[in-house]
Length: 180
Image (tube, rainbow, N blue to C red):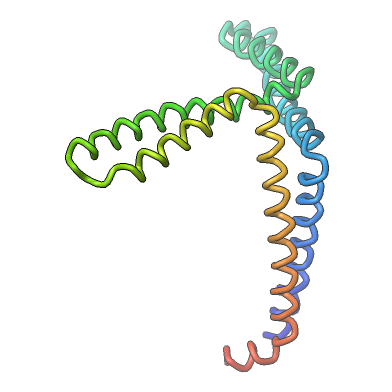
């Protein structure tokens, strides 16, 4: 049982160090991280696209040709302009927040007409709409901020996990005794 906890300790430290490395990379190089992710996504789209074109020339399947051309073109756009992919996600999220926020504003006015507490719902809804517009107006900068926040979270998680692993390692004998 003690060997199990020691193995778990090593595994936890290794994964925490990996999280720490990735988190620091996200934190200090968010633009580069977004570009790397875009290149990887571009490759994942390019490879099936090329295979679709190969299938077209081999089997003369028109659907494979259309799929191949669209995939290859999308991959080229993403690889040549990685910020395009980084901008799409915040744009979609921004659009969703604006639409969702306006529906929530409508619901808060329904609450108001029924003489219920509505002001808190209204204020939260307006904040949601404003957040959506911020995403829509500056998607790439927002993607960088989100990437940086994820990096901060990963660094904090890694540090806390290492501390926790040290506590468990220090008290492994107590754990083994309790489990028996």
